[in-house]
Image (tube, rainbow, N blue to C red; front, side, top):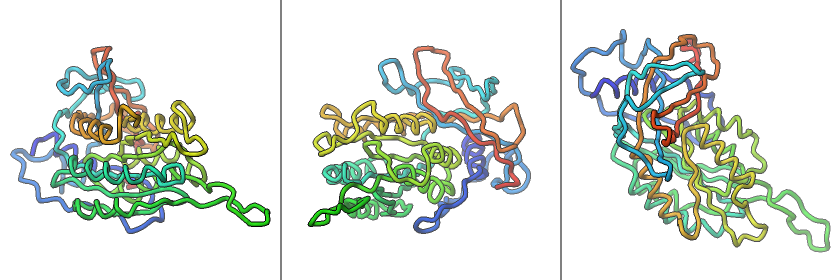
Length: 344
């Protein structure tokens, strides 16, 4: 195993995780096959899982001015800054064979009811295409509340079954007082709760690359957690959020239009965690969006550095990754929490 991968995986194993939240079964740690003995000893004392050197690991995608993915850069093409201070890149790789955990989070509120069949079909095809033998996935839905449809597994049959169980999930906020009582409005769409729960209950104990794929029109109403908390939990679990903006334009009530609050929320979550927002439209159907997302997940750079500030004081550290080519845009998480190892 290459030194970069050893350092990367060991560092991820030691990363701080957010406290558990009450949902479903306990998240599990993936059973990895024993690694081959390295040609040189690891630069740590004791078992490899106990890392004495803090390494910050970042997965990054790079796009050109036409929004196309760029996959042929080298270590010398990048610069990394933490809180404005230039850092030395110690580990770099274009390899994307690190284990991948995908959380597929699907909006099943009233505004998405007519899209569920399409989401089932396209989601199954996407998981079939993107998952490799060491990769795993889980499926959650959210509407008036959240539901774990399939826990973390590498069984595509189980994942297909989970998608087949997708169904509308909406409640109502009140009853009118007319002669025939009727429900007056949708209770809510707990998007932020679902992201927070997926991060803490499912992603926090996983290793390797982690991505939440959220299919929604971006609306949130009734979540106990704020968007800020959802982003924080995702960052602490080292998960990127890939948002798929999918609105039913024929839904009575209009849904969420491009540029509205819901879309801005998706942009904020994806930008802060190093993901991307994809838009589904007539010329860009969900199947095509999933193909683009698959390409991005296989066209990434893994960058690792030891911070010049060694303090583990729990503070939030801003990360900025640039390329020397000013026409290229880097998509990577915007920061991390420097958690003391005693708190892990």
